[in-house]
Length: 198
Image 1 (cartoon, one colour):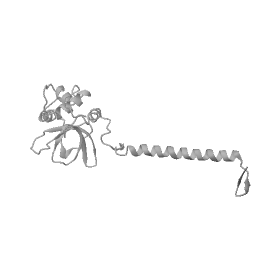
Image 2 (tube, one colour):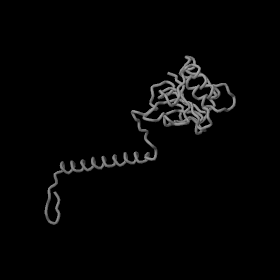
Image 3 (spheres, one colour):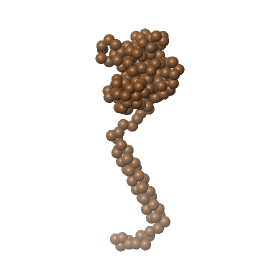
Image 4 (tube, one colour):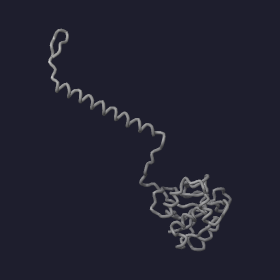
């Protein structure tokens, strides 16, 4: 018992201890929530990848998977070395050739090994695997041939990851300093055509 302002009060210790325990649990929960929120905020400057079910880069096609795995690479040496060069060359053709070789596309006759872009164009045309951009909706795994400088001939190539609505999505080497994802309108004038690997 204790007294306050002349009145005497009786403390029931079991209830008092229960009260203290509840306070401790509430405090613990609040501290844990604050710490968790702090960790979440600490990473807010980095983008959390959002997986989209219709993401054209999530293809099951073998050559697309290989090409996507190379995105971010800025060293083209393994691609142009694969094509037999000891010094750096323009390597977008070497890049798609290397991706094809990893999946036996060249061995199976689905595509050629090439460095110069027009070599690739000629091979697909001579093997009846060429499609003009205006008359064909590309498929995942096709090769795209581009004229990004509008000079009237293909000077860039890449792997088609897929299409969505009116756009085609690609992975290209020797583009913007490395291996990158790109996308174009299906009726873009810089698209020369497609080489079918399927």
